[in-house]
Image (tube, rainbow, N blue to C red; front, side):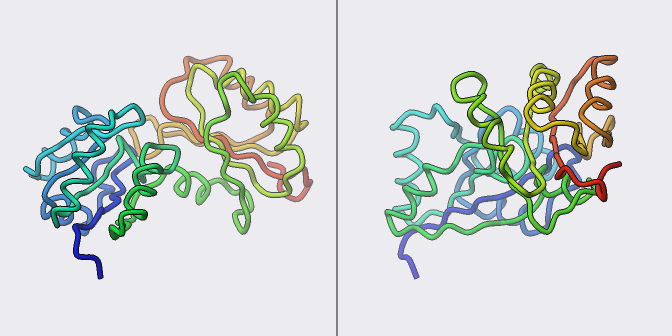
Length: 230
């Protein structure tokens, strides 16, 4: 048992504010402070649940001074919560290096599970989920083509995150590299305009070429197997 505070890694809703666990709410109310990816975004959530715990900023570009402040709270036996803008921290979100710092300092890291775009999307995809490979975001430039080529050799369902303005470029590049495979695209999960599109790469490209693309996107690609084509 550590004689220091605990770092609680708390999953937050990915859209619908009701997708927040009782344990998560109680944790955010009980800790000394909350470190959030964007305090303006997180303020909406904590106000909704009448949480008055002090908010601080923690993101990929946090200064050493900001990180030191967080660690100082923990070393002073104060519990701290880490949240991201949406979903589970450290899953293609800031936090990995902080977790490593806490481990090296002998600080307990406690996960508070909840919403995740990754698991929400794959659960409703209709693609095999007994084994899947999560890629996160493809590199925007350097190393992008190498990463796409690497995907050709994987024999599992592939899961990627993508931004709206790069979606069509990514779909075209993936089709060129992987061929016509079964694909599922989940957009705006748990939100008002949630949609899940199933078909082939060509189907998806045709669909999104005809509309303005908004929101967070999860791309899921099945193996080239006739049994799982839609």
